[in-house]
Image (tube, rainbow, N blue to C red; front, side):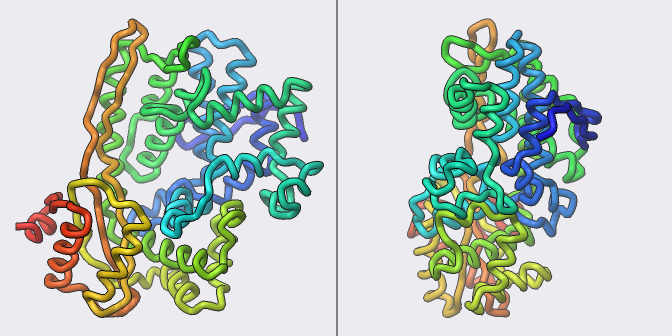
Length: 420
């Protein structure tokens, strides 16, 4: 591996330079796979600007923001390196199409978790047989390179420091709240980057300022913010609302997610995809496997999605109340299919437009900003070429309320008319 720094020109931050250890880690197979995995959970039709942002681009952005935290917190060189490494690799255990395939695994109640993924990413060429041989080859026939990198950078202390990095990714230890909390480096870059590519014209300095205002409290690992950051946190919350106001109710993208989920769930159910190893695929390899399935319902659904021949779908409906689990949704849409007399599939998204943020200030006081939502969005689609009519919507709405104890939540003119 090369041992030189490298410079990128980032869409948000301009020219960014990374030190040799981070440059080395960015070139390892576990990171290079992320060049072929989207940041968005679908190849967006409604917002083409976000269709092909890679997780690699986002991960580099998060690592850049981590360098700003190190500067403001007075961390030493090794601590800054650990924080940057955690920010860089935080997404390397992601499934194809991000959280979409993870949700498909939830639909089928797959007993699969991030610990399994990290055990594979920690494997190297000398340990492949312990973890299933070729199944641990992350990308292009290579193992992840993570353990090898840690040995190169930290020598005999590699396993110990690698443990600190992995703890941070999972929200533990001194740096955990920088990577996984209400307001962390991951969502600072993620949200602003999506807003930028979406065309919302966010302030590119906003995530930098918030990162610089972070202070790592060594005693408990909780992040504190400077008092002056409150206005920026409010601005970030407004940006979050705007981003998800566009993302959540986008009709073509919602239907596309639903179609890809249906194909993936059917593939898991029928053994087309292995539940424990398919997460290592890239987006394109994942779609290739679905497209070449012997099962027509899987193959044809994916091909229709790829050419934007979308299923007929309902208007999206907002509800209030406890969010049903995805296995509950899967069972529920079988009831909808029987009621409407045609095959249907459904999907729900918890309202992400609003979130309560509990901020600790460097002074020791706390500030709560925003509020959590009890709303969720639900839609149904069918491969049968037949539009859903108002009576279908009323039946579905009534079934949702009965099955989940939900109440209709008017969110726009169309939905308000439905729930009058």
